[in-house]
Length: 79
Image (cartoon, helix red, strand yellow):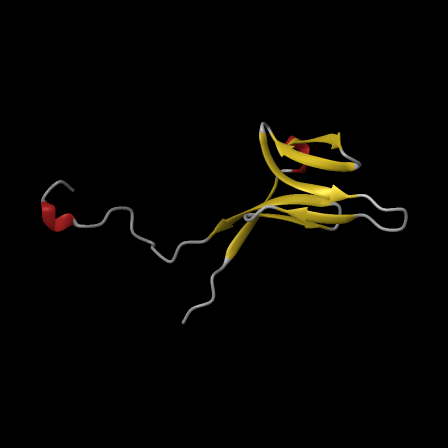
């Protein structure tokens, strides 16, 4: 079984935060992608699936596909 590989795309500049109930909710445009749980000692980042916080930046994770060909099923006669 092959391990899935991901490409990390920096989306930090596109993120907006909204303070709600003592936590900072993170949005990519209008989609909620995570939150920062703010405590007196250390903040904790909880990100939605497909997003990652790493070293002060927020990334969207894109799965790298194994398929290298542009089209498939050429036997159907349209390519």
